[in-house]
Length: 249
Image (cartoon, rainbow, N blue to C red; front, side, top):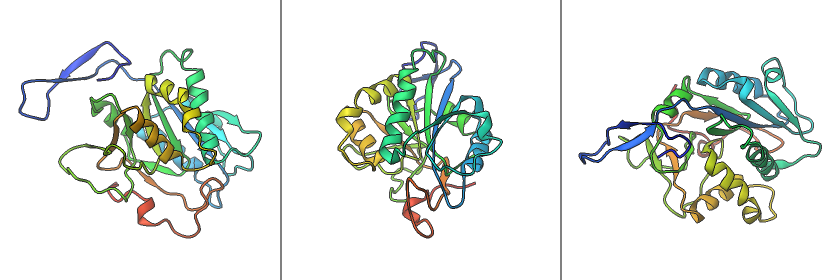
Protein backbone atom coordinates (compact mmCIF):
# COMPACT_ATOMS: atom_id res chain seq x y z
CA UNK A 1 0.00 0.00 0.00
CA UNK A 2 1.33 3.42 -0.88
CA UNK A 3 1.73 5.60 2.22
CA UNK A 4 2.08 8.88 0.30
CA UNK A 5 -1.61 9.44 -0.31
CA UNK A 6 -4.78 8.75 1.59
CA UNK A 7 -6.98 8.63 -1.48
CA UNK A 8 -7.05 5.17 -2.95
CA UNK A 9 -9.07 2.97 -5.24
CA UNK A 10 -9.84 -0.71 -4.92
CA UNK A 11 -8.23 -3.13 -7.36
CA UNK A 12 -8.84 -6.83 -7.64
CA UNK A 13 -6.25 -9.18 -6.17
CA UNK A 14 -4.71 -11.51 -8.81
CA UNK A 15 -5.55 -14.49 -6.59
CA UNK A 16 -8.92 -16.16 -6.05
CA UNK A 17 -9.12 -14.66 -2.56
CA UNK A 18 -12.05 -12.31 -1.86
CA UNK A 19 -9.60 -9.93 -0.16
CA UNK A 20 -8.47 -6.91 -2.13
CA UNK A 21 -5.37 -4.72 -2.25
CA UNK A 22 -5.43 -0.94 -2.58
CA UNK A 23 -3.40 1.15 -4.98
CA UNK A 24 -2.68 4.91 -5.30
CA UNK A 25 -5.43 6.78 -7.04
CA UNK A 26 -4.43 10.43 -6.62
CA UNK A 27 -1.98 11.82 -9.22
CA UNK A 28 1.65 10.94 -8.52
CA UNK A 29 4.30 13.65 -8.79
CA UNK A 30 7.82 12.60 -9.60
CA UNK A 31 11.34 13.91 -9.04
CA UNK A 32 14.16 12.34 -11.08
CA UNK A 33 17.83 12.37 -10.09
CA UNK A 34 20.50 11.45 -12.65
CA UNK A 35 24.24 11.16 -12.12
CA UNK A 36 26.21 12.37 -15.16
CA UNK A 37 29.91 11.73 -15.84
CA UNK A 38 32.43 11.76 -18.65
CA UNK A 39 31.88 9.10 -21.33
CA UNK A 40 33.87 8.32 -24.43
CA UNK A 41 30.52 8.26 -26.21
CA UNK A 42 28.13 10.63 -24.35
CA UNK A 43 24.67 9.24 -23.66
CA UNK A 44 23.06 11.85 -21.40
CA UNK A 45 20.95 13.55 -24.10
CA UNK A 46 19.64 10.21 -25.37
CA UNK A 47 18.75 9.18 -21.81
CA UNK A 48 16.92 12.47 -21.22
CA UNK A 49 14.94 12.06 -24.43
CA UNK A 50 14.07 8.54 -23.32
CA UNK A 51 12.84 9.90 -19.98
CA UNK A 52 10.62 12.38 -21.82
CA UNK A 53 9.19 9.58 -23.95
CA UNK A 54 8.67 7.57 -20.77
CA UNK A 55 6.45 10.36 -19.40
CA UNK A 56 8.79 12.33 -17.12
CA UNK A 57 9.18 16.12 -17.20
CA UNK A 58 12.61 17.63 -17.75
CA UNK A 59 11.72 20.40 -15.31
CA UNK A 60 11.54 17.73 -12.58
CA UNK A 61 14.90 16.15 -13.50
CA UNK A 62 18.03 17.10 -11.55
CA UNK A 63 21.45 16.30 -13.02
CA UNK A 64 24.34 15.67 -10.62
CA UNK A 65 27.27 16.50 -12.86
CA UNK A 66 30.82 15.23 -12.31
CA UNK A 67 33.83 17.38 -13.29
CA UNK A 68 34.81 16.77 -16.91
CA UNK A 69 31.34 15.69 -17.99
CA UNK A 70 30.79 15.92 -21.74
CA UNK A 71 27.79 15.70 -24.04
CA UNK A 72 25.47 18.16 -22.29
CA UNK A 73 23.10 19.69 -24.82
CA UNK A 74 19.70 21.27 -25.35
CA UNK A 75 17.76 18.77 -23.24
CA UNK A 76 20.25 19.06 -20.38
CA UNK A 77 19.74 22.84 -20.36
CA UNK A 78 16.06 22.26 -19.51
CA UNK A 79 16.86 20.33 -16.33
CA UNK A 80 17.99 21.39 -12.87
CA UNK A 81 21.78 21.08 -12.70
CA UNK A 82 24.10 20.59 -9.74
CA UNK A 83 27.83 20.61 -10.51
CA UNK A 84 30.12 18.61 -8.24
CA UNK A 85 33.24 20.58 -7.30
CA UNK A 86 35.21 17.36 -6.85
CA UNK A 87 34.87 13.91 -8.40
CA UNK A 88 32.53 12.00 -6.10
CA UNK A 89 32.46 8.66 -7.89
CA UNK A 90 29.90 5.90 -7.61
CA UNK A 91 28.98 5.85 -3.92
CA UNK A 92 29.69 9.54 -3.40
CA UNK A 93 27.14 10.50 -6.04
CA UNK A 94 24.59 8.06 -4.65
CA UNK A 95 24.90 9.74 -1.25
CA UNK A 96 24.74 13.28 -2.63
CA UNK A 97 21.69 12.52 -4.73
CA UNK A 98 19.89 10.89 -1.80
CA UNK A 99 20.78 13.66 0.64
CA UNK A 100 19.73 16.38 -1.80
CA UNK A 101 16.24 15.01 -2.33
CA UNK A 102 15.74 14.02 1.31
CA UNK A 103 16.86 17.47 2.48
CA UNK A 104 14.37 19.10 0.13
CA UNK A 105 11.60 16.53 0.60
CA UNK A 106 9.77 18.71 3.10
CA UNK A 107 9.81 21.59 0.62
CA UNK A 108 8.86 19.38 -2.35
CA UNK A 109 5.51 18.72 -0.76
CA UNK A 110 3.94 17.76 -4.06
CA UNK A 111 6.56 15.10 -4.86
CA UNK A 112 5.42 11.56 -4.07
CA UNK A 113 7.89 9.39 -6.01
CA UNK A 114 11.63 9.63 -6.62
CA UNK A 115 13.40 7.95 -9.55
CA UNK A 116 17.20 7.57 -9.45
CA UNK A 117 18.82 6.82 -12.80
CA UNK A 118 22.19 6.64 -14.50
CA UNK A 119 22.94 8.61 -17.66
CA UNK A 120 23.11 5.54 -19.91
CA UNK A 121 19.59 4.13 -19.73
CA UNK A 122 16.92 3.70 -22.39
CA UNK A 123 13.33 3.51 -21.13
CA UNK A 124 10.25 2.08 -22.78
CA UNK A 125 7.71 4.74 -23.76
CA UNK A 126 5.00 5.53 -21.18
CA UNK A 127 6.93 3.85 -18.38
CA UNK A 128 5.74 6.40 -15.82
CA UNK A 129 2.07 5.62 -16.51
CA UNK A 130 2.78 1.89 -16.51
CA UNK A 131 4.47 2.07 -13.11
CA UNK A 132 1.65 4.11 -11.59
CA UNK A 133 -0.93 1.65 -12.88
CA UNK A 134 1.01 -1.41 -11.71
CA UNK A 135 2.53 -0.24 -8.44
CA UNK A 136 3.09 -3.29 -6.19
CA UNK A 137 1.20 -3.12 -2.91
CA UNK A 138 3.86 -4.24 -0.44
CA UNK A 139 5.45 -0.99 0.85
CA UNK A 140 8.65 -1.65 -1.06
CA UNK A 141 11.06 -0.01 -3.47
CA UNK A 142 11.08 -0.63 -7.22
CA UNK A 143 13.77 -1.49 -9.73
CA UNK A 144 12.66 -0.75 -13.29
CA UNK A 145 15.76 -2.55 -14.57
CA UNK A 146 16.21 -6.31 -14.34
CA UNK A 147 19.81 -7.49 -14.43
CA UNK A 148 20.61 -10.39 -16.73
CA UNK A 149 21.88 -12.21 -13.65
CA UNK A 150 18.33 -12.63 -12.35
CA UNK A 151 16.10 -15.35 -13.75
CA UNK A 152 12.36 -14.70 -13.94
CA UNK A 153 10.77 -17.24 -11.62
CA UNK A 154 7.11 -16.31 -12.20
CA UNK A 155 6.77 -15.06 -15.80
CA UNK A 156 3.01 -14.55 -15.46
CA UNK A 157 3.53 -11.87 -12.81
CA UNK A 158 4.65 -8.27 -13.40
CA UNK A 159 7.04 -8.05 -10.45
CA UNK A 160 9.39 -10.36 -8.63
CA UNK A 161 10.59 -9.71 -5.08
CA UNK A 162 14.32 -10.10 -4.48
CA UNK A 163 14.79 -12.98 -2.00
CA UNK A 164 15.77 -11.75 1.44
CA UNK A 165 19.53 -11.51 1.73
CA UNK A 166 20.25 -11.91 -1.98
CA UNK A 167 22.63 -9.33 -3.43
CA UNK A 168 20.92 -6.53 -5.36
CA UNK A 169 22.60 -5.74 -8.68
CA UNK A 170 21.95 -2.96 -11.17
CA UNK A 171 20.83 0.32 -9.57
CA UNK A 172 20.18 1.87 -12.97
CA UNK A 173 16.59 2.90 -12.31
CA UNK A 174 15.27 2.63 -8.76
CA UNK A 175 12.07 4.19 -7.46
CA UNK A 176 11.34 5.18 -3.87
CA UNK A 177 8.25 6.69 -2.25
CA UNK A 178 9.01 9.69 -0.06
CA UNK A 179 9.00 7.82 3.26
CA UNK A 180 11.62 5.34 2.03
CA UNK A 181 13.72 8.10 0.51
CA UNK A 182 13.95 9.72 3.95
CA UNK A 183 14.70 6.35 5.55
CA UNK A 184 17.48 5.80 3.01
CA UNK A 185 19.03 9.18 3.81
CA UNK A 186 18.91 8.47 7.55
CA UNK A 187 20.76 5.19 7.02
CA UNK A 188 23.54 6.38 4.71
CA UNK A 189 26.13 6.44 7.54
CA UNK A 190 25.38 2.81 8.40
CA UNK A 191 25.66 1.84 4.72
CA UNK A 192 29.03 3.54 4.21
CA UNK A 193 31.85 0.97 4.33
CA UNK A 194 34.58 3.30 3.10
CA UNK A 195 34.54 1.84 -0.42
CA UNK A 196 33.46 4.28 -3.16
CA UNK A 197 31.58 1.77 -5.29
CA UNK A 198 28.84 -0.87 -5.26
CA UNK A 199 25.96 1.50 -4.58
CA UNK A 200 23.55 -1.22 -5.71
CA UNK A 201 24.91 -3.77 -3.21
CA UNK A 202 24.75 -1.22 -0.38
CA UNK A 203 21.21 -0.27 -1.36
CA UNK A 204 20.15 -3.93 -1.28
CA UNK A 205 21.70 -4.38 2.16
CA UNK A 206 19.76 -1.35 3.42
CA UNK A 207 16.50 -2.83 2.15
CA UNK A 208 17.14 -6.33 3.52
CA UNK A 209 18.20 -5.03 6.93
CA UNK A 210 14.98 -3.03 7.34
CA UNK A 211 12.83 -5.73 5.68
CA UNK A 212 11.90 -3.46 2.78
CA UNK A 213 10.76 -5.48 -0.25
CA UNK A 214 12.83 -4.92 -3.41
CA UNK A 215 10.40 -5.26 -6.31
CA UNK A 216 12.21 -6.01 -9.58
CA UNK A 217 10.14 -5.74 -12.72
CA UNK A 218 10.06 -9.02 -14.64
CA UNK A 219 9.93 -7.47 -18.11
CA UNK A 220 12.55 -4.75 -17.76
CA UNK A 221 11.23 -1.26 -18.43
CA UNK A 222 14.70 -0.02 -19.38
CA UNK A 223 17.98 -1.13 -20.90
CA UNK A 224 21.62 -0.41 -20.05
CA UNK A 225 23.16 1.34 -23.07
CA UNK A 226 26.53 2.73 -21.91
CA UNK A 227 29.96 1.15 -22.30
CA UNK A 228 32.64 3.35 -20.73
CA UNK A 229 32.14 5.93 -17.99
CA UNK A 230 34.45 7.67 -15.56
CA UNK A 231 32.15 6.32 -12.83
CA UNK A 232 31.77 2.82 -14.24
CA UNK A 233 34.90 2.10 -16.35
CA UNK A 234 34.05 -0.97 -18.40
CA UNK A 235 36.26 -1.71 -21.41
CA UNK A 236 34.69 -3.16 -24.50
CA UNK A 237 31.11 -4.22 -25.12
CA UNK A 238 28.66 -4.68 -22.28
CA UNK A 239 28.23 -8.32 -21.26
CA UNK A 240 24.74 -9.80 -21.11
CA UNK A 241 25.00 -9.89 -17.31
CA UNK A 242 25.17 -6.07 -17.34
CA UNK A 243 22.17 -5.76 -19.62
CA UNK A 244 18.48 -6.52 -19.21
CA UNK A 245 17.73 -9.72 -21.09
CA UNK A 246 13.98 -9.24 -20.58
CA UNK A 247 13.88 -5.78 -22.20
CA UNK A 248 11.77 -5.81 -25.37
CA UNK A 249 10.93 -2.70 -27.38
